[in-house]
Image (cartoon, rainbow, N blue to C red; front, side, top):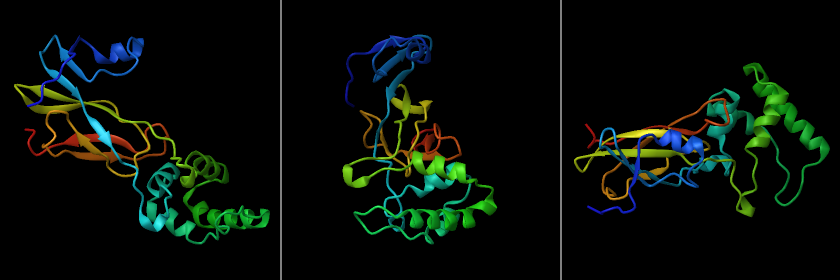
Length: 200
């Protein structure tokens, strides 16, 4: 098992973070009260999209609008985008908006909300951009050299697909990440839970 150095002795991680005492969350903590070790989970990826959506994070957009992904995907399939490398004309923009509202309006979505959500998740992939995201902060709880659970400090946001989660020192232990979606930008596409078959 890989040994970690630079152990930080803390009683309360949340109080440390709120107080702004550290520039970044510590990687390794030992809870003085319980003796439990806490090791920060490493996340990679988590921003895949359905190939049919051409890079559009439909799962996030639909959740923010409060409709199933299939509803938004069907509505957007009726839109006629401008040719690549060009901007749509005013008439085309107006017609596309009319088509979208015709499909989404019956679900209680207003024009203002559609604009708000569309603008929030708009990005230019060719420029290396990505829609707004915040990485999750989760700690694995270690007792007697074994992972016994996980503590989610911040579920993050903007995950369109489950990220790969790894606990340093326990890289061979597979973890399953479950995401939560909703109409609040700050928690849409957040880590809701992490499980492992080896954790009792």
